[in-house]
Picture 1: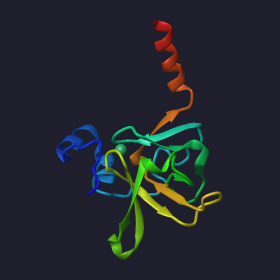
Picture 2 (picture 1 turned 90 degrees about the vertical axis):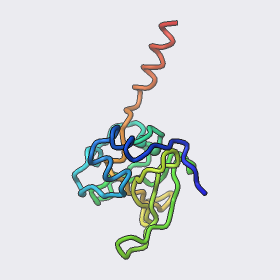
Picture 3 (picture 1 turned 60 degrees about the horizontal axis):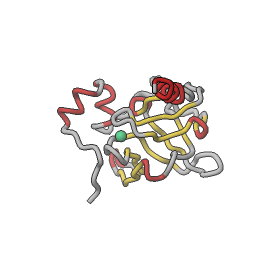
Amino acid sequence: MVENKIEKSEGEWKKVLTPEQYNVLRQKGTERPFSGKLYYNKEKGVYTCAACGQELFSSDTKFESGTGWPSFYDVISSDKVRLQEDNSHFIHRIEIVCSRCGSHLGHVFEDGPEPTGKRYCINSASLDFKKEGEDKQQGQEEKNEK
Ligand code: FE
């Protein structure tokens, strides 16, 4: 049995997520293509789970898929996600969930670019974005205070 490191009741998730985030992350919804805030994002940084904050994808692996959903050809490391069979809507797909909180992120397909050939198709609503350098700056401030 798989255990999540972060367990919250659905009521607790509802309090901390927006209705759209809740629909996608906790009810496995799919946002409308081209509607998400991160599809066109080309800044350098790290994409994190919008539910628990775990780092999931690097901007270095993001590519223009034309699908309307943020797409990546790799995960920061394979232990950040769990892949599971999804046979809903009469289609066989591989669902991607965050390994830390079990929230739904999207699906992975085999038609991505080199070097992996994978296309991790992720809802914008499932992601937050940490711009490169912002972490470092925070770390620097902490050091300077000491
Ligand atoms: Fe998560």
